[in-house]
Every structure is written in structure tokens, then in C-alpha cells.
Image 1 (tube, rainbow, N blue to C red):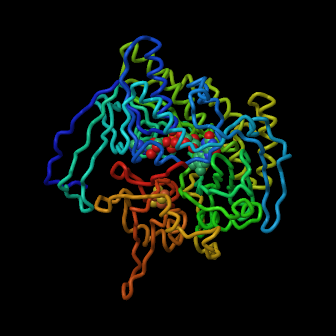
Image 2: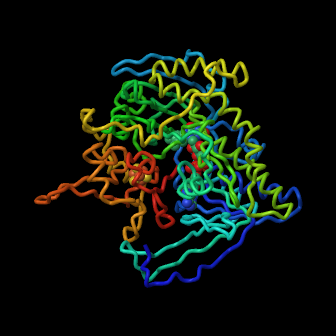
Length: 561
Ligand SMILES: Cc1cc2nc3c(=O)[nH]c(=O)nc-3n(C[C@H](O)[C@H](O)[C@H](O)COP(=O)(O)OP(=O)(O)OC[C@H]3O[C@@H](n4cnc5c(N)ncnc54)[C@H](O)[C@@H]3O)c2cc1C
Ligand code: SF4
């Protein structure tokens, strides 16, 4: 906290028609659409986009096989314009892994939308960089390196804007020589496009009870490595998904492998965060997974060039909250528009940005501002996003209830029938009943897992991995990972759950250290290593860790994830 004795100086204020938090596909699509609509109407609109990464794309991590429907709605001629979707999918495999062997299950009954032909493999970070160029050329003001750290409320309780760009507060709370109080960016509407588990979105959802009528949101953690491999093992356009080993049947998750661009292999592993075993380490599961022959053969002679992690929204249709609130809206993953069985959300993020922009533009044209954009909720209710999520709504609950093997078969059948009937399922709508934090089991009921040591060729440790994520935070700033109660990690989480933060954090941020001669161990937070995946905010069993924005520009610097 800033020293109480130092009164908060006046903040400069900048006014816009629309302020957008987050330069992901959702926020950028919204900004572009607003400018396109203004150009069509021959009117002016001012739009600002804030991005906490040092540049657009620096914090974007995705698979990514991209369904171009979203991009086509924004720029029908995106190919001619040079959008970086260059590798089309040529082969699509779905494999069930055992410890040593594997079964190709690509033949399982699945509706057509589960196939990847017609989609493109790309770096979503690079697509966002390209979208940012388009946005700027249309007159959008883009502010990378600016973390939106607070919501600004108006007198009627509406969101009026955000505070961004607070810099120069030291670790102990005093103001350093370069202190800057930040700027208030005031908008007639504020769009929250922070991606999954947005820190301001979480506050807006709580304040306006946006989730009062939906299920709890569910999440996974996705850990990704980018490899560059020799021609001998590179298959441009090849897509491979796996289920099974090394996870047991009760632990949901699976892998992806996409071959694209200049001999790049995007390799990643998702673990559903409703896992129960507190000793499970998603990072180490991923490392050992790479030793399976179905994976290692594609990495032979290759070089790992980047690493990162990000949570993914998995709740689907039944977890989508109310989208509009006084003065603002949620777009993209902040609202949870990922189609989990397809592992795709970027097209829906773009679509939702477009829908929100349409609603805001119409309202602004009527001279409105600061009210609730109900038209956006109404548009979502009849949208292609809702329709798509509705057809797959039982997939994730079936996996949770039946386990990976039977759950996948049941989900395949349910999605196929639901697709044929245009949305009717014999199962109705299965609900998510428990948060991921509440799903963790007690340490006394599980044996610790002994993971193999990394070999430095296929598998690596956390610290060398974080190193190639180019993560950096100024160390002399208040920790952006806040504990509601600092005693809980050692007094509650350690005895009850073995303090699982040590294991679920993919960046080695949390440690339990026993100093020589000390009675109790200490909980250490290496906040400078944080890759902003948000898993701790989601999975901490005591819900004691709160992820907040560090100074803008801090965090990973992903080149092309
Ligand atoms: C592991 C993984 C694999 C995936 N694979 C695929 C795939 O193959 N295909 C596909 O289509 N989709 C995939 N997805 C989903 C897809 O990545 C998301 O649906 C999409 O990125 C959502 O876009 P968004 O704009 O809502 O959020 P994001 O892409 O997360 O962008 C949000 C942006 O907002 C910024 N931000 C957040 N908070 C603040 C703040 N307070 N102030 C300033 N800036 C802020 C972030 O830094 C970020 O740049 C995957 C997701 C994951 C995690
Ligand atoms: S500290 Fe939290 S948000 Fe940061 S990398 Fe670890 S789990 Fe992810």
C-alpha cells in the first residue's frame, strides 16, 4: 500500500467514448469494430485500449488452431490483408495414450465442428500484433505497458473508467523518485477484455452479482512450449490431440501438438483445475508426457524456444455470467466463451468483441453512456457463440462425472445427438456444482507423487523454463500476489493440503522454506517469476491468494505464443 502519510496526488484524466482493458482478440476486435462502424456512419468515436504486457502479444498464450469465422466477420478479406494465419490444418489426429502404447481414436463419433480442417495453425500473439496494427491504422489509441489496476465508479455506482499506469511504488509501499500516480481513463462505456479470470472482471462480477444466475466458472491450466524442429520430423499443418497418460482417469486434461510456420511445433498440456490430488504438479505431468513415443518422435533433434502458461475457461454455456453492467461489459474469456471440447475460444472472443461494439455504438449514437448495455446480452442470447457453446454444454460435466475415458465417449455421443437435434440433449443441461478450489482433496488421503528428474533434452525444470518465458518484474514493487491472510499457507494449507501452490504454480513462485533452527516453515512468494497464468487465484483451496496487476510491462514477454 502507498504510505498513508503521502496523500494521493491528483491523477490526470483522459476521456473516451469507449475504454477497453486488454489487447487480446476480444478487446482488439471490439476496438476495430467500433472504428469501422464510425467510419461507415461518417461519425467520430474515441477508443483507447490498455494492455498490461510490454507490447501487444507479450502476454498472449494460446494453442493455437484458429477457426477463422471470427476474423472473417471483422475483416472478410483478411487473407489479402496479410493476417498471419498461414498454415492450414492438413491432418487431424486424436489419440488415447497409455503408459507405453497408444490407440488412435480419431474414428470416435464426433460432430463435424470437432474437426479441424478449414482451420489455421498460428501464434495468437502474432495475430493480436497484426490486429493491433489494424486498430491503430483505424485511429484506436493503444497503450501497451499500462496495467488497469482499479475500476473507477461514478456517483450512481456505475463503472466510469479505470486507473492505469501507476508506477514507482516500492515494495514497502513508499513512493520512489519515479512515482507516477497513474491516469484515470474515463469512458462512456468500459469493456473488460482481460481474458480468463480478469482481475477487474472478477471485481465487476462480484459487485454487480453478474454470476447470480449461472454455474460457477471452471478452469484448466494450459502449459505450452514452442519448439523448432528439423525437417525430418516436421509435418506442416499436423494437429494431434491426446488424452490419457500421464494423467489418471479421474484427472481431466490432455495435450495438443500443432506443426506450423517455420518448423515450429506448438506443444502443450492442459490439466483441468478440478483435480483432487493435492500432490499433482501440472508442470511435471507435462514434462514426463513429452517422453511418450507419440510425442518425443516429433521433437527429435529439435530445440525448445519458448515456455509459458495460462489458465483457460472451461465452464462453457452454463457458466457465462450476465455480460453487461452499469457502464460496461465483459468480452472474450473474461466472460468464458471458450468451447472446451474444441479447445477454441479466440474466434468467440472476436465475435463477442463485435457484438459488444455493435451494442455500444448504437447506444452512443443515442447519446447514452454509463448505463447497462442490455442489447449486448440480448445479442449474445441469439448469437453463434451461444449456439456453439450450447451444443457442447454437457461435455465438461460428463468428463467430471464419468472420468476421461467414459466421459469422452459419452460427450462424443451427447454432442453428436445434440448437434443433430439443434440443441436438445437427453441429459438436459448438466451443471457445474463445485469450484475448482473446492475440488482439491486432503493431503492425508493421497501419497506424494515422485516425478522423474528432467533430462535437459526433452524435459526441463521450472526455473530454466521460466527463464525462456522472458518474465520480468521490477523487484522493488509491492507483491502483486496478495494473501488475504498471510498465516493461511502455513497454518492451514500446509497441514491440510500440503500447500499445493508449490506444485500447481507453473513458474515456481511459491515455496515452503524451512530455515535452520526455525520452529515453523515460511511461505515464500517469488512474485518476479509470475507468468500471469492466474492459476493460484483459481485453485488456492482457501481462496486466500488474490492476483492483482503488477506495474505495467511486468510479466512474460512471449515472442510468438
Ligand atoms: C492453453 C490454451 C490453449 C488454447 N488453445 C486455443 C486454440 O488452439 N484455439 C483457440 O481458438 N483458442 C484457444 N485458446 C483460447 C484462446 O486463447 C482464448 O479464448 C482467447 O485468447 C481469449 O481472448 P481474450 O481477448 O478474451 O483474452 P486474452 O487472449 O487472454 O487477452 C487478454 C489481454 O488482456 C490483457 N490484460 C488482462 N488484464 C489486464 C489489465 N487489468 N490491464 C491491462 N491489460 C490486461 C492481457 O495481458 C492480455 O493481453 C487457448 C487458451 C489456452 C489458455
Ligand atoms: S503466481 Fe499464480 S498467476 Fe503467477 S505463475 Fe504462479 S500460479 Fe500463475
